[in-house]
Image 1 (tube, rainbow, N blue to C red):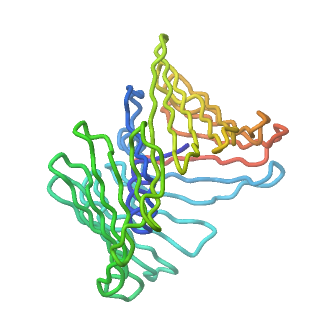
Image 2 (spheres, rainbow, N blue to C red; image 1 turned 135 degrees about the horizontal axis):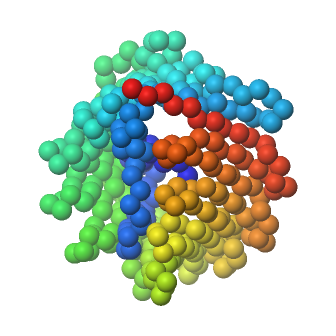
Length: 324
């Protein structure tokens, strides 16, 4: 639920590192609000530090769990956990481009990463180095077309050893057409396609093909929903995202290949579009747990409360802020 531009950026980078490629990149077909990203909000409010206190049981005393410090541009520069020997330092090119992350253990470098970009601020490479190593242990490179869409990413191991490759094709309107994944021998092992009329099938020995289909619809009141269907060998896994007229997601449903509901989730929001509650339900519609959020008047997250299926408070997280 709580996402920042930094975390999203790092996750996207790490997806290339581990070659874990979620093939469907969700597109925006209808306007989904105008909420600002967390780092923009932190820049506006001049947040210097965020302290997070956790109470794992209502009867226990809360403890400092971690704290994060930010520069005046709203970007995180330090993360320190109170229960770990590790500390992470973040370095930035400018307001939005992460140039390096350094992991420290007992003030000694454990590992570090470097990021390089092109003139359009697109990520060109990600390099990972272990402690006291001047040789890159992992590198992922990225290539883009004239429209700025990613068309290729290649992963290399130690001493530049080729590990894997992913290629992307697009339709003229920029929507994803096909994703192809190759192994360390540059052999095609998996294909993701994006056309509703196609069905997933085995297209060659040991080459798996999955089809992703997006069905979108807007209701008269301005609310809308998007259905994502994954086709594989005649079986369909379905996900449904439902949005309110003001573009906030209010419900998510995940279905099994046999059409049976796996689980669902419901969300509520305040007038500023911030999530005030999240409830997780099992396939029978019984609640498993819920999360409730409160905010300061300036919009910063204040408290997060987790309740079990019996609506008993089991976990509390409190956020405290220091300012420039």
